[in-house]
Image 1 (cartoon, rainbow, N blue to C red):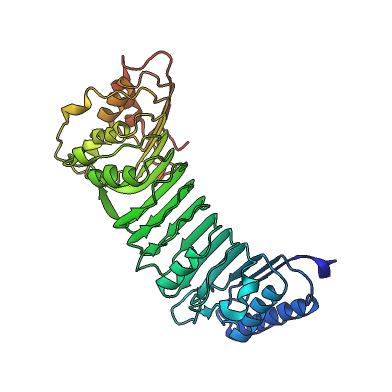
Image 2 (cartoon, rainbow, N blue to C red):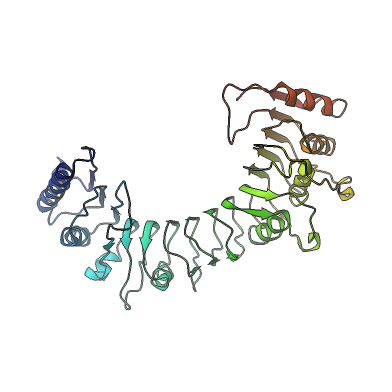
Length: 411
């Protein structure tokens, strides 16, 4: 029955440790098996062809070219080629994906997944007009080739690029009117300029926020997840750059080391006009934890906020230069219904932020406080001091209609 199966999936991985001859034998056997099956499938329609090859010994380009040619001849609509070895090193040559083999056949593709390939379309290649999903991992090639290809993907709905070569930026000169999902991770990109009016999900992971992020003001953006590693972001930058480009986002996750210093550019801040759920992961707040009250500026920038999650991780304590801001006294968070705080130790400005938020959230229904950190949890640690501080600073401030839950061990 497998002879008429329209979905073909081949997975080959090393199972013999460090013994090189056995590795080579396994790789050769995998290649022979794929060739044998595809030979039996000649002339038949194969809707899906997925090949996952994890051996250190790269399969020859001739075999790979034949497999791609088979997909083209079999009217394949979903093609996946995962070629990244488990121990990926720079000395392993990438496979040059042969788009020029059959441009008309390639235009039938609706889904493409490529890993560890070099992508260099010929100058006359005009993209994939019927492509809906493009998943690129460890893909290299001139940035302008990739940009030209994306310009020709007029029906693209889902785009993911992980560890790809985008140092020159990600810019597409035509509107991507159907794009709903965009994921850019560890691409060292400094500029993202796209016109994506219907974008619903945007995920960015990298060492720092790109200098320019222009998404063309999508009006249907529901989810945005921003993960910044190895760099800090100031409160001014967070509340200027993010709401300017993600104005309509409804659910925002920000995982970054935010510097909680007194804002200097409040007059330039924008607002999250539709933000209802905010999740802040603060991996290192040791130096600024006495200024936690400044986190309330995120609430001030989101007038419709309903749910707030803040996850603290404070590895050591160094007293900060506390600078109180009287402008926060009259803030009201009228729509805030649920608030969850983890890593609450009750030291520095945490208690001040907690008391301020509760006092100014008349609609608060559920308040959850966990003394254990969710970012760097210590399973056997029970911290009762944070619970006592929370109970003390909430005394007389909590509405009878608010449900309070306090956990002193990892929940």
